[in-house]
Amino acid sequence: MDGNSEPHHEPRRVNNDPRAKQQKGNQVRRDRRDVHGWVVLDKPIGMTSTQAVAVLKRLFNAKRAGHAGTLDPLASGGLPIALGEATKTVPFVMDGRKRYQFTVCWGEERDTDDIEGRVTATSEQRPTREAILALLPRFTGVIEQIPPRYSAIKVQGERAYDLARDGEVVELAPRPVEIHHLTLVDQPDNDHAVFEAECGKGTYVRALARDMGRILGTFGHICALRRTLVGPFGENDMIPLDQLEALCDRAASGEGSLADALLPVETALDDIPALAVTRADAARLHRGQAVLLRGRDAPTCSGTVYVTVAGRLLALAEVGNGEIIPKRVFNLTGLTASPGRNERN
Image 1 (cartoon, helix red, strand yellow):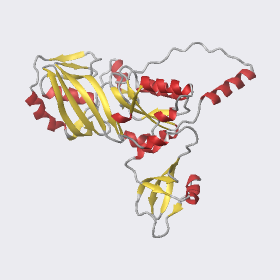
Image 2 (image 1 turned 90 degrees about the horizontal axis):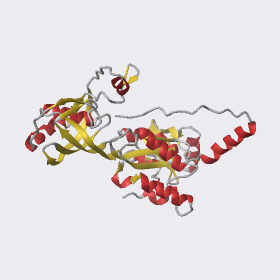
Image 3 (image 1 turned 120 degrees about the vertical axis):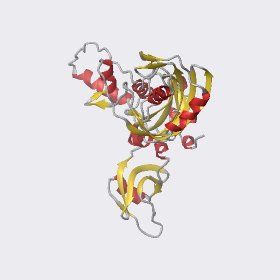
Image 4 (image 1 turned 45 degrees about the vertical axis):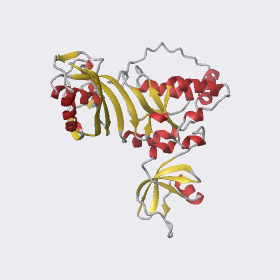
C-alpha cells in the first residue's frame, strides 16, 4: 500500500518588501537547475516513492522529477526516478516488465495483504513444497486478479486505499494481468516461502500471495518484498541512497560529478528503434516539423522511433507514409549522464 500523509504547515509570514520577493525569485532560479537522465534508486524499506522523488530532486537541485511505478514503503529495490527531460520517457518504463522477489508468510490473511495490515483470517494448515509447486502453473500466463483493497486504484474518483482506511467496504473488479514467470526460490521453514515473479503492468504481488494462500487453504500475506527489475533497469543499475548522498557530497567539494549517477534519457527507450538524421533534418524536427524520407537509404521501419543527431537524442517520433513526424522533442541542455554511463554492465 502507499502510505502518504499530509505535512503540517506553519502559518505563512507575509513579506511585502519587493526586494525580498526578487531575492526569493533569484534564489529559486539559482538553486534549481536542468538535470536530465535516470537514477535507479535502491529504495530502502520505510520510504514512500513520493518521498524518494523529493529526496533526489533535492540532492540534484533538479527542476523536474518523477518516478516510473510506485514501490510500496515496506518494499526495497529498484525505483527508477526520471529527472528533467527523462520524464517524457516514463511511460515506456512503466509499460515494461517487473521482477520481484518476495516472501509469503503462511497462516494469516491481512486486510492490506502484507505484514502491516490487520489479521482477518487464520489457519493452522501449512502447504507442502509439492503443493506449492503444483499450484504455480495456475498463476502463470494471463490470469484474472482482484487488486488489493488497499491499492491506488480509483473507485468513483476516490483511491481504494483511502476508502478502505475510512472503513468502507471496497469491491474491486477482477482484471487481466500477465505473469511471465513464477518460481519457488526457497522454503526456509513451514511458515514461509520465497518466490520470484516476473510480471507485466498492473500486477499486484500482494494479491498473488493472498490468492495462493487461499487456494492452498492456509491463507498468506507478504512479509518481505524486493523489486529487482523495472523495464530496462536491473540490479546493476541501482544506487543505494547512502552511496548517492556520498556522491553528492563529493561533487559539492569538487571531487566528483553528479553526472556519474545518471543514466542517459534514452536508456528507457531500449526496445524502440533508433533513427539517425542529418543536422538539417534535425533542425526541422526540433521545430516540430515533419521530415520526408527520401532516397534508397531511407529507413524502412514504421511506428515509434527515437531520433538522434550526431549520437545525441533529439526526439520521439512516428515513422509512416514516407515521413518522420515528431511527437516529443528533447532539450538536453544542462547536466546529463557522463559519456561512460552509456556503457552499462
